[in-house]
Amino acid sequence: MKKILLIGIFLASLFAQQSGKELFEANCMACHATKKPQNKKDMTAPAIMGVMYHVKQRYPNKADAVRFIVDYVKNPSPQKALCPSVKRFGLMPKLDLDDKTLTKIAEYIYDNYPPQGFKHPKGKGMGMKRMGMFN
Image (cartoon, rainbow, N blue to C red; front, top):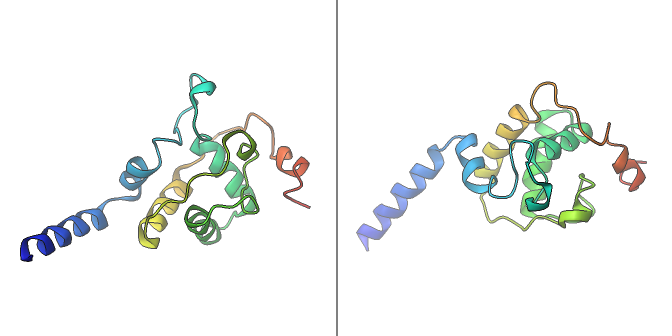
């Protein structure tokens, strides 16, 4: 029993020491590409640069954006969705990650995406207005 407890503590400490980038790569990159996809038909979720483009439009303040991301990932819903691509991909599955891990990921993606000079292919979020997401 002691061995199991020590292994659990060891693994938890390793996980806690991971950077936001490592956590993003381990938990998010399987679905959210970090580069423009070669074949859009192979995509299972919108690329992270597009997601963060929309998040930052709605939540330009980092603290607000991080809170939104943590809440959305824990409890995704159509009412919270900011990306028009939810029509194509549907809602992301609820992730069972703790708030500390999600906060590290959210802070990392806020600080790094979209990259400098990114131009959204659909313009300045007009798709969301057409969807009635902004009044």
